[in-house]
Image (tube, rainbow, N blue to C red):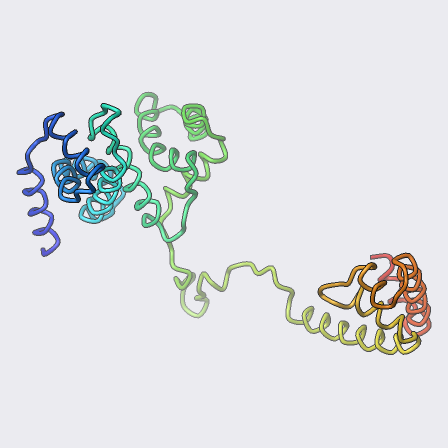
Length: 289
C-alpha cells in the first residue's frame, strides 16, 4: 500500500503542475542553458511529468511496477531537459518524448527477463511491436498460420523471419529456475543436471592428462640429444608462451636469422628421430594430425 500511496501523490503532483506556454518554456530553457539555472530545468521537468505518466501507462502490459517505469521515465525527462536546445524552435514535449520512451524501454529490456535479450534497434523493434502486430494480424484473419504471421511481421519490421520466430518464442515462455525439478518420486532431477556440457568426459580428461605427461617426459628425454644452442632455440621458439623471433635469437647468439632457422630445423629433425625410436606409432600420429 505504501508504493500505491506514493504513486497517487505523484499523480496528483503531476496533475497540479502548471502547463508552460511556448515562450515561458523557451525562457526557462535559456536560463538553464546559458546560466546553468537548475531550478529552471526542474520547472521544465516538473511541468512535463504528465507526459512521463502517460507514456508509462502504455508499457503496463510488460508486468513491471508503474512506479519504476515512471522513475526511469523521469530520468529520461531530466536527460532531455539537460540536452534541449531552445533555438531549434521545437516544443520540449516533442523532444523529450524520445528520451522518456528510450529510458523506459531500456529499463524493460533489462528487467523483463533474467535472460538479457538483444538491444539492437531491430531487436528492440521486435520486442515492443511483435505482440501488437501478431494480435492485429490474427484479428484480421484468424485463419493465418503462425508461419504466415511471422512472415508478415518480418516484412513489416524489416527483419529476418528467424529473428521473428526467436523473439516470439522468448515472449511466449516464462523464466524457469535451473534448480526447478523434473520428474516424480525417485526419478526427480534438476534442470541444471540436464544441461549439455562441452567438457570432455572424466575418463577422457584423465587419459588426456596421462598422455600429456607421457609426451612431456618423452620430449624432455629426446631434448637431451640436442646441444646447448639447439636446446635454447627450441625452448624459445616452440615451448614458450611468448615465442622468440628468429631476429631476437640471432641477436642473442650473434648470428643471422637464416642461421637460427637452419639450427631450429636441424634440431626438430633430431627430436623427430629420437621420438621415432622410442614411440614410432605415436610420432606418426602426431605428424599426420
